[in-house]
Each structure stands twice: as C-alpha cells, then as structure tokens.
Amino acid sequence: MFSVINLEGQMLLPKHVCFKGDNGMYLRARKVEWDLNYLEFSSDDIADPTVRNIIHTNSDGTIRIYLSHYGKFWRRSPNWIWGDSNDTTSRNLDTVFRVLLLGGGKCALQNLGNNNYCKRLTTEGKTNCLNAAVPTITREAQLELHETVLSRRIYGVEYRFKDVNIHGLKPRTFYTKTITNNTSGPHKNTLTISYSVTTERRWDSNVSWKLGVTTTITAGVPEIAETSVEISSEFSGSYTWGETTYDKVKQSNEEQIEVPAHSKVTVRVVATEGICEIPFSYIQEDILTTGEKVVTKMHDGIYRGVNSYGFETQINE
Image (cartoon, rainbow, N blue to C red):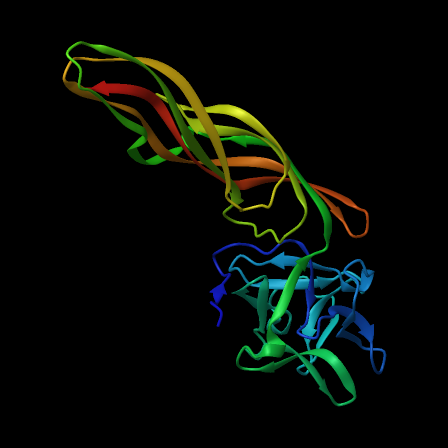
C-alpha cells in the first residue's frame, strides 16, 4: 500500500535527479536501435554521466525532463520515451509529465501525451526501456527518485522573525515532590531538584523536495523566550533535511525548603512549552556527481522548534 501525492501546486522536485527501476538499475541514456536516444534501466552507478537529468518545472506543477547526456528533453514516441526533443516550451504534451509521489522515495511519471504511466518494458527488441505504457501505477511504473548530488551544505540561514508563528502554548510541570513534617517544630530540608528538559528542532522546506543527500548545516537555533523568539545557540553538523531532532538536557539544583510543624509542602518546577515556526532563507551548496559545485539562494525554508521557557520553582503548603 502507498499514498499518492500529486505534485501540482505542491512541492517541487529537486533539479538534478536520476531514476532507478524496480530491477534495481538506474535509468540511463542509450542508443538501442536506429541511432535513437532510448532510456534504459541498465546502469548500476549513480555517478554514470548517462543517468543524469535536469528537472524543468512548469507553472502548473508539471515537469519537463532534460537528459543531460544527449542535451535534449524527454519525449514520447510513439510510446517509448526518447531523449530527443529540442523544444524548449511545454506546448508539446508528449514532452510533459505529471509527477506523483508514492512514499518511500518513490514516484510515478504520467506522460500527458497519452496520460499513461511510464514503466520498465521489454518488447519489440528493446530490453528494460522506459515506455508510457500503462493506465495504472504497476510495480514496473514505481520509480525510485534520487538526486545526483554527492554532498550538500546549508549555510547563510536568515530567519524572518517578523513572520514567526508561536502557538501551542501550554503549562508544563517538570518536577513535583511533597515533603511532610510530622514533628512539633519547623523542619528545614535541602532538596535536590532534578529533571529533564527536551527541545525539538527541524529545518525543512515548503516548496523544494530534498532526497536523502548527505547534508551539513550551520544555523542558529531559535527558541521562544519570555517576550520574543531569540537565537539560543548554533547548530553545525550533519543533518537529515526535514527530520525532527531531539535534545534532552538534565537540570539539577538544590533548594532549602522549610516545612512548618505538622504540615506538608509541595515543590513544583513549572514552565511554559510552546511551538515556534519561522520561515527562513538559506544558501544551498551542492557538489554534483560530476564534481560541479552548484550554489543556490533559497527562500523556502521553514523552521519548527519546540521548547520550554519561564522556569519557576513553586513551593505551596
């Protein structure tokens, strides 16, 4: 079972991609017959220069796919997909595709020329070539989508604090202990108060889709404070884009607690927990499988953090 997400009006595919078939092989450019530019699932190397494609996204969310090896766009003819089109517009629907995300890094490509899904097909003397052949998403039409990117660095993060959204504010109790004094006089206690505080953080994008590329990020970490959102620290290191990370910190301190005769007191540590969401811009530096460095200024970042603030120790009889 899988869920289908139509990309029209939603997230954009990465620019530099390749596709892997259900046979475990990457889709590559290959002359099969009559010197025609077929696409064949027969490469086992993501760094193979014949597997590289560049995605061109149309205003309606559909895409055209530029086959780097031949320097031409994908085209359906008659139902085989060839890399042979010089048309730079999207008027020819045989060169236009609709992408559906299937989950697990897989997608399906629907050619708008015949509205069929592209699948791995062996027939007519062709073996494991791409063909817009089926009206449903069969196993052979489920393609793994990969970025032809060796490494990625995210830096130059600029948060747009004026657009911050703070919500989900709620009281949290981190520590509770009741002390009883059954004697006839007041009693002083030295109480060690220990508790843990967990914070969450996630850097993601709401337009561009990023696919499992080894990524390092350098960015400040925003947190809700008493009256505003502030940068509390900086994170620099390896990070899986879009993944929520959790930091758990243990806190401990001592309090002198006086309990009156024949009574009890309850000690609590309370705070307010909240969620902050902040859009941000950033610089994305990719090293492609060709060794080329591509630097792009992006404006689609969204940071989500959960933290607690306003810690207070309360002592009540």
